[in-house]
Amino acid sequence: MKTYKSKILVVDDDQKIRFAFNEVLKKDGYTTIFAKDGVEALERVDADHVSVIFMDIAMPRLDGLEALRRMREKDQSIPTIIITGYGTMQTAIKAMQLGAFDYLTKPLDVDKIRELTRKAMASVGEPEDGTHEHSMLTVDVVDRYELVGSSPGMQEVYKLIGLVSTTPATASVLIDGESGTGKELVARAIHASGSGNGKPFVGINCAALPETLLESELFGYEKGAFTGAAERKLGKFEVAEEGTIFLDEVATLSLQLQQKLLRVLQEREFERLGGSTSIPVSARVLAAANVDIESEIRKGNFREDLFFRLNVIRIHLPALRERADDIPLLANYFLAKYNEQLNKDVKGLSPEAMSLLREYQFPGNVRELENLVERALMLTRGEQITPDMLRRMMAGSRKSSFVPVKNSTFKQSRSKVLLIFEKQFVEEKLSRHGGNVTAAAKSSGMTRQNFQRLMQKHHVRAESFRQDNSPRS
Image (cartoon, rainbow, N blue to C red; front, side, top):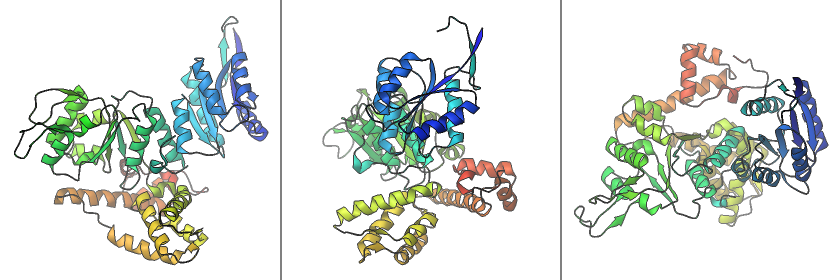
């Protein structure tokens, strides 16, 4: 037996990037080989025993996505991490659809490169130290519905959208996140990226209709099924055909409707109200929730078996305050959007106004940011949006959104306010202590374990509150 070093192929037309990879990977015991474009990459893959590939997208002659597509056509399944300087939703989705192992955005992080190398090696059974023993004989989304953001949290969302689009329509998806984070946009992106994109996208807000009306909207009814049913009506599941049905605020469904939805997901069929003929369901079911469904299960408000049926694939949308680096990108996106719609020519936000946006917590998330930019644009007479105007609107937003009572019962409304309080309490403590979980828990009068349970419940990450020199504990 003889020991060989695992070979990692780095494909990038930037010599500095290739040099950086070489410096990082050789310290970990890997042999690094290089290609300057996609054509050269295909040649190296054919000629060398390559374990992992890091490949840029924008390159001369042949770009990284096309090179990856050709590798997959030849059944070359080497784990490939795609690299790009422009972390858009379309490129991330496309990369994952083509079978990329993962997706990296520039500037590159050394620790992330090492982490992905280890994971990629493990995925093909290669040792993580870069050496192994062998026998000598061993051989695009519509712009209107585009998600905007390049933060790590959003890159994970894009990757999951790409992965979902390659799965069968029978795989349900649960999209969770606070109100205003863009759950419907994720649903539309999944639809637009999948094989059923030429079929209908049918959305329904489960909280907007009373139970009796919602049932007939979902399943339809036969003529004479009830008083006023003068003719047959098709339900949303039937209208969606082989497309997508999106159930927003699914946690508000009554237990009776939850039972009927569970049967649809299990049997992939249903009957119209007043009918006896089974109608097959071909659409993909996407569901969204802005509350903690696991908590609703513990309270007896949501069926656990339905949760498991919906939660085949889960996509969590981070709150805007957890991805503050995306705020300038989003603000400018909305500025351009409403400049065009309102026939305005506002040049931008002043540095002070942009700084104010970055410091604001945005309880209403992306929806609130869009609303702020739109209103500011309408009221601005000069060439820039100023911080004074934003402060007035933010103050009004805080007053109006402090206790959002949307649910019909006292119990539901109290639960919602309690959830908001818990999340704000945890975030305030972490912010005050620079992301130090131990210190935050101690100042809260809680054990570290209980404090961490609250963090997990509300998807709060300590890293979001840390400065570079903050202690990690």
